[in-house]
Length: 149
Figure 1 (tube, rainbow, N blue to C red):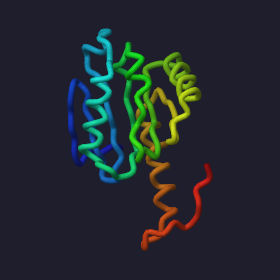
Figure 2: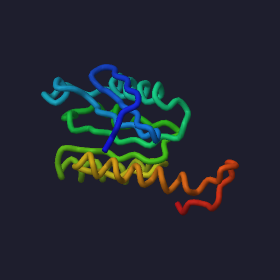
Figure 3: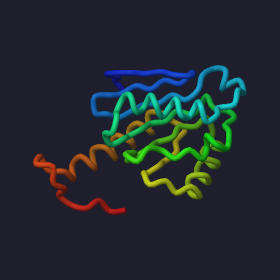
């Protein structure tokens, strides 16, 4: 389903870009899965590799966090890029999904965020957001209609 056209990695995390500009970010590595703290430096490294892939283009992300067991408060409070349009977060369990859901409802990010336990369903959802937004723009760059908030 996801076919990479470019990829970057840093500090145990890796990101791949597909032909539509959707980024699949796999956060952390086996050391994080074993309990190593995912800290602000790890989060900034993820942000940097996303920037290398899409620069200032609108961001559509699938963030696979199944390797993350522990994260610092600073990492959790990190504000995503301004150009983020939609983000699907993949977690390892229903408990993780509930905790992330509570955090997202409190943090209220600007972008659409949805939480999944299945990476394929997450990609389909993000791709749908990309397609819906793409259909709203005419070939001359003018918006055809306002997207409902």
